[in-house]
Image 1 (cartoon, rainbow, N blue to C red):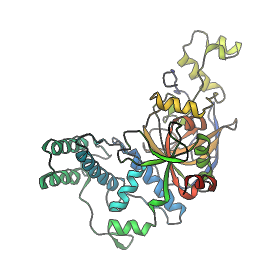
Image 2: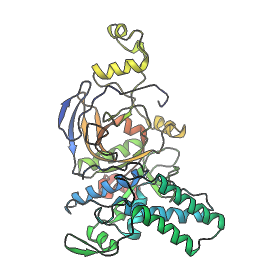
Image 3: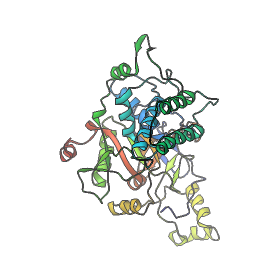
Image 4: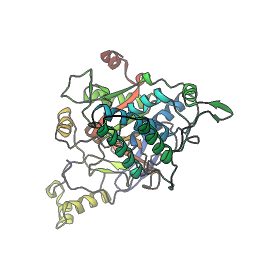
Length: 393
């Protein structure tokens, strides 16, 4: 699938917040739309894991009746970098000190140090309007590698490392006042009422036994967290059950496919288009066009294009051939349908609001999600009781 030439340059998509709109080839109607906080921008960082999980937790607070919060991503990111350098040292330099991670990294850091509001710790202490960790990450890597080479983490090592954190992200807050009350990061976290033990990560791959946890073999799972493994249809059932019962879903998956177009607000998993797939009239119209151009015309003038029927075996083949990769985390907040009744998942991205006409949202098709999901994270109560029993939850 990844090798097929495919563009969506002329496809237009409705805003995720609109009820219905005819946009040429697609007419989307929202069937489930859950409360969420405004779209943010991770900008020039690899911190989608934190933005997606923060958005998910902010929606959890809305669901719990706690009100709207704007939580600090960079407060969590700072602790994650510290944890990574420790892990990398003990692995003799063989760990992952890149920018990526998974949802459980957020939860582990939350349990360690708590959380603060965005207004207390914005995490930009350098000359930039947006987040940019390119230079910052270079220093972290150099400091971490120096400790490994010296086979020692001296007091100076920790001073230098924390100095870099302070320089780029800002000094950590001690006590702070928020809405008239005084907190520390720990007491503020306690006030939110979030229990990290309530959240589980679920995946679906048949190289491991179903209904048992295993450690996903992706580089960003540097903490070695286990994910519950279930059949594909049951993973999709969890997503639908959660959304239909007021729970949003944190999603990790592959966004490098040609069918993924954040710009146009859609992600689909199309069947290969060949000239002889079309009617005689359309073949005449497409005569002389390459496949890219034909597909542009299809999306410009036709109804939704047929997509692949994804089975467990097709999904597994994508994973084991390295076509399906661990690229990006986002936040699924609802369900939509096109005019043919096909299901899409309304997805909140963390690339700001200016990169598409949908306020930073996109619709991912059922076929795309079946094929390209690495794992999902949900509240335990968002799992059907029959599956909870199988998993021992």
